[in-house]
Picture (cartoon, rainbow, N blue to C red):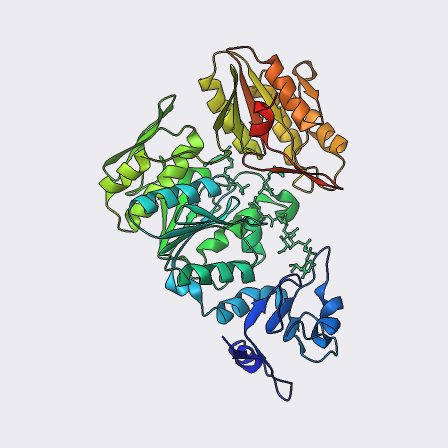
Length: 468
Ligand SMILES: CC(=O)N[C@H]1[C@@H](OP(=O)(O)OP(=O)(O)OC[C@H]2O[C@@H](n3ccc(=O)[nH]c3=O)[C@H](O)[C@@H]2O)O[C@H](CO)[C@@H](O)[C@@H]1O[C@H](C)C(=O)N[C@@H](C)C(=O)N[C@H](CCC(=O)O)C(=O)O
Ligand SMILES: Nc1ncnc2c1ncn2[C@@H]1O[C@H](COP(=O)(O)OP(=O)(O)OP(=O)(O)O)[C@@H](O)[C@H]1O
Ligand SMILES: N[C@H](CCC[C@H](N)C(=O)O)C(=O)O
């Protein structure tokens, strides 16, 4: 594509008057990935400001030009008011509005986004469609790993680029995790959604949203405007008013066709009835029951055959780092990504049903994340586990000792202690565990690294439990 700058400015309704024009054939959003034909979106962040580099990049012919946030008086740099809010609009224009040619299914919720997206992928692959997923676990294409991602929902320009690649590769359904940050920061603006699914809302990210009401409003933006299929779990979302027309509820307290009945969650797995069809999966946990109900309600509203959907649900495979059993000699652990109070509570409740002996929990809380969840998770851990080892979970730039003391503040000291080094904490839990006991390692799930203020090291809970 070779485009004139004027075409873009016209599409944005920006009067370009006598300003200069130039051509570009590629959109770039990071100075580490540019070429001489790139139009760079220069948006300052917390650590790096591209504006300081534009003059030399242009002088050296390393980019064609840039859109920037403030006037620089440098040729080929065009200041755009509120550029950061217009990234989706610019990228959707540059990539010819890819979402209009795909069925994009957005999944939001405090917990269950990755699980729901990966279950949708499995079901739709088995129904014979070409699929992609975008989320915390990276991108997949037709069930195979495709691209790693830094964020759950990538920034707008990267997202539109991924959607353009999906279109080129004739993908039919894109299952996209939509975080509340993404909704609040406009990362999914100018995406046409075929469907939206809202799994649940419980406390998290209150450092960013301040109140649960603001958090709810950010999530509800996925329904504004409501896509053709709009679903939410009635019981798990504390709505301030009845959902507007066109939003369909699912779950045991829903009214209408997606009310679930005969719910069972036990050692054999989960089962329920919905829309006169029986569904069963060997996956465990109440969270997965609700995630699968969302998947089923979507597939049925999407016109899929209920018996085929039921057969696909019966074949669902577990997801990396979610309720994942890990064996080391005769010791058993469950590795899970529970990093919110609600997820930890559900995890420990499910684990209790799986275990005859004691539950030995290893967990921590991330740095630079909502501090208010730390004492709440401490309290839940203390109430529901028999023994707790508090440890580091990506302290990032925060002091690990301070994070731990905020967690320990609400814990019973007779059954909890602190070992900062996560590998040592996991080793100790394994040594303490008797044959009937179950070790629960919560918070990092699939993650392969541990981030401190000055370094990021390779670290996996699964490998740590299995190493000597
Ligand atoms: C706090 C926050 O949102 N940070 C985001 C932000 O980072 P930053 O402000 O530090 O960026 P920066 O390094 O200063 O860079 C600024 C700009 O310069 C560019 N750059 C940077 C370096 C360079 O050499 N050249 C260059 O051009 C960058 O691409 C960027 O455009 O911009 C980065 C690039 O887009 C994001 O990856 C990063 O998300 C970080 C990883 C993050 O942790 N974000 C969290 C808060 C988040 O968004 N989480 C939600 C999930 C929440 C959930 O659990 O539901 C998510 O969707 O991921
Ligand atoms: N429906 C659910 N309700 C409550 N907890 C759930 C649900 N589904 C999954 N969980 C729990 O939350 C953890 C994270 O699940 P998952 O990765 O699917 O959520 P997520 O919303 O994608 O999280 P993140 O935004 O951090 O990527 C799981 O390991 C499990 O403990
Ligand atoms: N998407 C979540 C993941 C948290 C995982 C936990 N291991 C941590 O690092 O805090 C977040 O960014 O808040």
